[in-house]
Length: 279
Length: 301
Image (cartoon, rainbow over all chains, first blue to last red; front, side, top):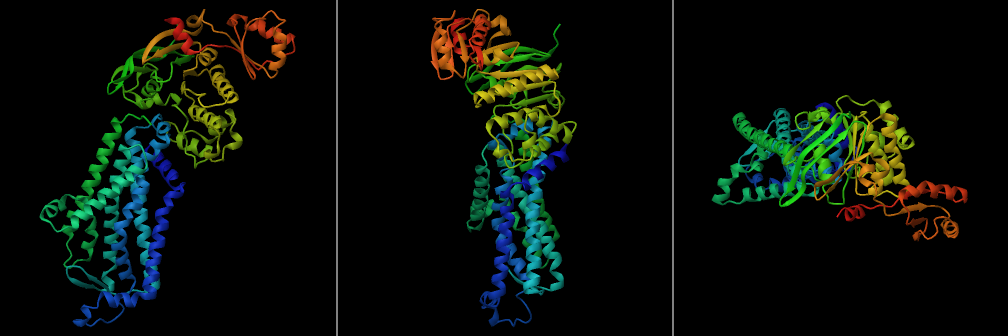
């Protein structure tokens, strides 16, 4: 029954125009960033590295597909949650708002199975969105800007050899999928609690923005709270671009996100089992 | 000896201080067209939602086909078709796609030929591939019946199935529902706030008010001696009124509203009135007893 329900959910999801808004946005943003880097990337890189150029001599093609993919990852992972919440927040609440939930729940299917199928749909959608971003930025970057070493400045300045970048990118995108799955789980939980489709999207974004703002303020209280914000662990993809590379930290960050996914999904199941369908 | 197909015993549900359903009990037998009658806000929809496990009762038992609903939920629901309140579909999908989505959630997936069969039966075969958002309320109601019939249920639960329909739509839906019972032997549980609708369609009924059963039994027994007039619908109201004065029904006119004429006549005078109209060459659209639930409650107190 789970597979039949999942098939239903995917048919419904991809029969609606709004499901493609996020993919359209990714295509537009990734395309625009690449085009801008292709046209004016040299000046951009000069500006970014102007302080370093006094002490270091840069040689070779630093403006390449790897750098553009990294820039896009940094920029989009803040905004992709909104696009994900737009769809996953609607999965249960949308059915309640439109009344179709009644037709589903009077069928001989367990509520838990239906919720699991919808949750799987949310995860599949999030995965497809991150994958589309990964494929598009990788191929468009390589095509327009070529391959080359990746220059990353965070706490330290690190230069990764071109041959050392692909697996790190792959790892970063895989980790991003986990981060976006956490966002999807949260908006899915709100989708179960509320009966209108807008509230889950707003609540998810309010929480993410609030956590991000509090994390960025350098006060001891917020520093102490930071480990309890799941947004802290969503940045775990950056660990793939650290030197020395630490699997244990990645496991720690990934574990924290996975725990959030399990808690959000578990609470959704618990709530839906007891929910009176009044819509 | 009739076989009980649905037994409700001591069902109660409250929302905060509001008691929506209060110790409700009734029994529906196999083959019944069972009327579930009550004014708006009496607790009909809450009860129906509890019968379909959409809402969990505070107390009481629901037994369907001899099995407890909450212990055998999936099996019980596989035997039931239903429309709860208005039929809401995925507007962006076609009628056929909607049926496919719902059919896949049955214990035994429903075949495409069965879907075509039910669409044909409700008169929507030629609109099978049209998006549901282009359907009228009457068409959605018919599609609602189609989805309820998909898996060949033994019991169909309908929550105010004629709500929001025009007179022709109401007639069509009533005929479809009655033919379900006649031709396929399906037991029908039908909620309504219109007494005359239940009288036309049901053989047994329960009347509820403020969540409590007021009376349960055979429709004729309950309504015997209770009548507030006859309503005649004709396409020639002018001619009707002209000839009424010289007939045996002279002086029975209460009021006339376009095609509807209300007469102060008893229900058992309907055949004689019909015969007179035929003799007089007056077209008959319908003759029905005029009774409202409010009148009934007044007559009982």
